[in-house]
Image (tube, rainbow over all chains, first blue to last red; front, side, top):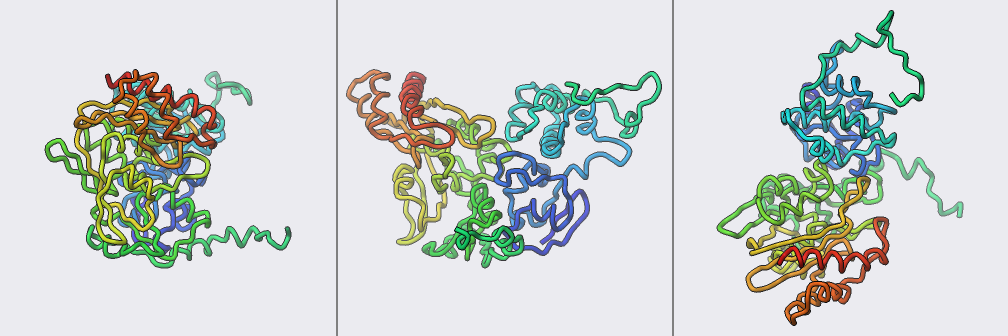
Length: 177
Length: 280
């Protein structure tokens, strides 16, 4: 069976009922989709299948033979975050990070739909299948809303990883920021 | 005790689980699906996979023969006049995008957007009752709409009301499509799923179809049920509050992870009353 993952074509040999999640993580070593609940409840394995967000743990390989899969690995460039990534960065929307890739792919699907005037309520509805056990929902919804509305500064991934001088931001571990 | 325990590695061996999809059949037309299904003996039917795939991946279900319907062409969605016909493998997401009626509004409450892209109408009707929660969120709206299920299997093709299909159970049947006519009016009352769960807790639907007023409940008992006691009470002239109390004649609410039978028993008549009041 054939899968195109983030633009690269792969020939996959696995039983037809193997989950897309197992194929991505264990055959192709694409590990951003997380194996959370593995029964469709948590959203951590969400990927785009031909542009639509789907749960990789609920999709059998045979059903996506020939499809194009997008994961977080395909977002942005090595030195430039995608708008969704930049928004998560800007809004401090990741805590432990386990749910983040699932949220990001759901967010990417919303961005692709291109509704620049999206209501916060609609964002919450679209993300309703995703759980964040750190309960960082407010910032996640902030980030996704900003990304969908295009309200994100273009971000250089390396720009503020090493803050210096007067612009240095002091983050106290455990602070609500 | 030690003798009965299964070593962790053995139970969770990845390759062992993968080898379990012994024979997989992938029909490419409705006719081929029906003929491969035959009488459904020793066959696991696979539509959206939202229920079966996690069971298989965890090694709890080891089908010897799997019939996968994703290329079977059973996903047509047709409207002619005021009749809607929904193919068995139509996804809930396609249903929401493709129809503009009462069922669409109910379908928007099924799980979340991503699960709805997998979950199918046929799977919803054939879902096993579930352990932690009730399944089959579309049962109540389909019964209220007076929908009829066409299925094939032992004894050939059969068309019957949804409530009869659900009562008999899906064993030995392959659902082909579901058909209903637009109702004159419809209403619904619901206790929605909490964020961390996929299933609607309870739903009551009422619809006026022809000269019938139909009332149905899902999420309270293992399958959705029609409440003829409520319908009869209304026909006999009872007001909505009095008629609503009769719902417990037809439904014995279950205990599960989402709600207790006590809670369901208290809440269900309230939902019925609200749906009926909304309908008027």
